[in-house]
Image (cartoon, rainbow, N blue to C red):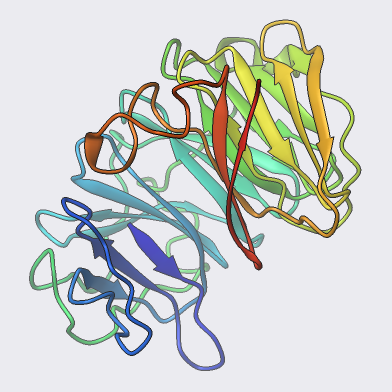
Length: 290
């Protein structure tokens, strides 16, 4: 799944990419050689999105709330309305709850199984290049009884730019804020705040990505201090740090153990204790341990 932010009078869009085979990105092709299909376009900014594990629902983070798009029926509904941009989202493993990270520092967990207010228009098919889908204003039905509400709002000290839910126990999730703080939370212990902290990053205004290894024992991040760090998720101990001059990484990916592209054994991690992909404006890089 790929989303575009939108610019000027044009809103954001959601695309589905077919990754079943080798992907070639010819410079002259705007749709990645026919593999990229638009699902829907909207009349507002789309900051972020996430898809559930079975690929049937997409949650969208916009400039005035979170919406849920059913890819099978094309139905669109509001999950949460707010005056702050939603910059990060993450479904928990079961797909029953979505975490929404806001620019104002709030993290809102929302149960998607609850009834939600439908939008005035829906898509005609799951995959369409039809007209832009209008979304109701943030004021519309703002106090409606179908609006998702949460009394379990979590507060961070700055804009929440990345969220990662652990699949081993969906009560636990990691969150990062633009001021460089990274924390571990337990949804059952929200009132107690974070249960673990990961110190070291220097950050002020850029996206702070998070990624965990397949065993969910290690956490990696890279901030605007151009340093990649790895911590133990359980203890919070920093176990690795490496400075990369001018390396401002905005995307990180820890491959599944023993698998590379297209499901084949990866040549990159055969002889290394760990390895991860990192993306920046300068390109795609692979960093590994000994």
